Length: 381
Figure 1 (cartoon, helix red, strand yellow):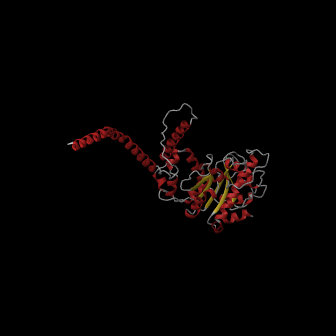
Figure 2 (cartoon, rainbow, N blue to C red; figure 1 turned 30 degrees about the horizontal axis):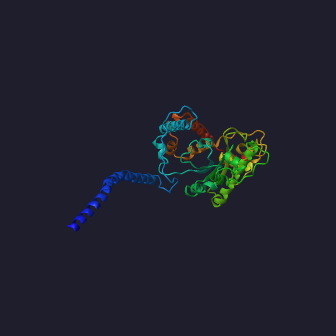
Figure 3 (tube, helix red, strand yellow; figure 1 turned 90 degrees about the vertical axis):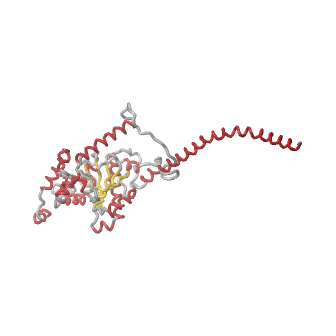
């Protein structure tokens, strides 16, 4: 009996000891849902990170959430106000573009591209294709970077020349180029990515005491950079140029009139490595269908687009029609009627007076008859 009583007493003491633990167990169980929710949040965050490239992959190590800006702004120069006004223009201009270009226009290049020119231009927002090509669609394969550099866009340039087989490689610099101005001075304080790009511009440094915005040396740097980029392209595409399948041309878009040939003029300064004005102008005159030297040029022919860039000088330069107009005329002359209508449909010209004027000017240029071979030979002598 004594043994049985002692056993029951021990069991009772054990039950009393365990009882508090049993009371706390539900509290622990109740605490589990928040922990589970935390794990769920982690899983959700992991899913979000995966959807945006994954943690440790791509350009973001962790996912961030940003708002879509719709709030009104009181200052027109506020970043949100500028964003709003920009996309107002995007939406409106795109609607106009869609309205003035019908199915025939897009059908001409919907399946594939066949550009005639690979263009290496500067990223500067002031440099845009309408300055030299009124219809760039399916005509200009354009690579842009700061300083219009061939090496910095080498893969894209090679794609244009080798895969798209464009017969023209056009390297287009511009007056007032910020990359050239930076390369002529000390840009050590710039970020690593910007320094790496500027390192590709191999031009003379600015002389001591010369202001960085002095027009003459700045223009010299712009032209020197174009020459250097043409040289880099010639080194890469030597065989294509030698065979005649590729022509490399360097030019400067002058929206400041630093070259004194008119605001917005595209001044050619280099053709396949030839820099002197007489040879560049000979190329221009050949393109324009003009034969022989310009009889009114004091330097025996070095007039027109390249006179101020290559050292030539004229007493009374002759105005040469813009190459943009010539390009429009060549499109009219070369393309079948259906293709021509698809590129520049009549209803688009009627809706846009500027396109109508461009078309009229191109037609007038096309109607100018070239001299007969005999007359051309005589005029050359």
